[in-house]
Image 1 (cartoon, one colour):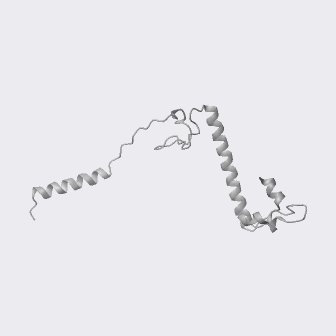
Image 2: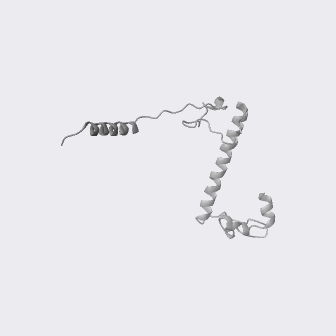
Image 3: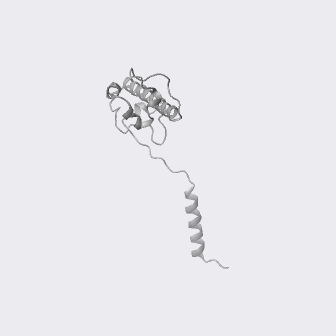
Length: 127
């Protein structure tokens, strides 16, 4: 078949467009007020240091370290809570009584259903 110059132009444009799809894109450089924490562990491209609630606006290194410590602590507590739920959901319970009235740990249901099994004074102690 015979190709016209118009057809060659269309083919060349299609090839150029498909090649551009695989070219690396340019990442815009963003400037934030938190450049002091850009080199901390956990700051990764493309977001860099991410503080959506602006908790560290004008904060120093001591405040940053304190919030990071608290975040790690709460993360560990949450992991232990999930592990506790998995353990009790599998049927493993502590031995003995949960209160002086003689209720055993196995009498308490797992999850949110267990809140109704705990006496009011016990719930107040949790809060």
